[in-house]
Image (cartoon, rainbow, N blue to C red; front, side, top):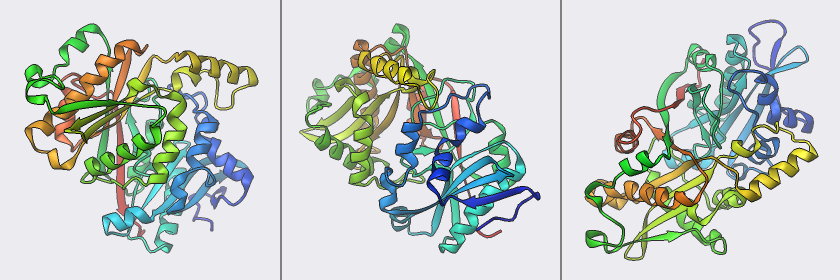
Length: 389
């Protein structure tokens, strides 16, 4: 299928060959090369995320990739996604678009979005939402602010004009996702206080304990984390339940980066009730190597990984079981989890961490972040519209 081209030499075609799949996966570093603020992700990492033989989401989703071409030159890409687990959970026929990367030209962006929307309409969808890559549990949103800030693991980068071009194609903002930079200075550590200066395992919190990450039991802990995550996030916009095989895939990808200090599980009388997971920023050790490192580059990467030469990290998961949300204890648990991470973090080399993303409509978590970091340093946006032209 070829979408109607806004100009004679622009066409959008589905990805049908192995060579074009490889091009689809590596396209951002080709079209964004030289743009201020852009750092290419590793092709290997993107292959795990997008290759149908690697990405776990293909077990329960129907996905079609498209490339935009101007003559023989690729100028953009997009994925159209029917996540069957999401549709069952939402009870509505809403598909997604994702992996949207393009030269910032209205005709290119409009043609890509039109191709994805047309395919979703053929699959029986009523609405389309995005961007996500390839799930709401993965990279989410289109970068609106923060293009000049350091890139962070599992967070997308887009040129500033791209959001305006999506809106120009008839998409409306549905939610903003915010990220906060927390510098790990002694002053900031001291200023982050749990209300009432309560401490885990003492006084009113005597029934509260903490579990650390165990490399030997990481699979079992991953299942606890998945259960807690699905429970804690189930009421949030665009949430899709994380499947057990998706968690296993994520653990396998992150395992080389993780240390015991990175995972906090808070238990009440032995039952998990809250969690937080921090992941080191892969761009710290790979950002200067290009998307496809040389053999020497791979040796450097392995050495840096072994020495844990990271200087930043991201809190990628933070949540509280639903049965405690809205209670006094439930309001304390995120602060307790972050406090525990900060305490442990003294043994790690990070100079700052990213808190995010946080949905702008999630007042509770937004207020927690802004109690220590007044303003977000990055903003991402989700859009939605009917699939009808």
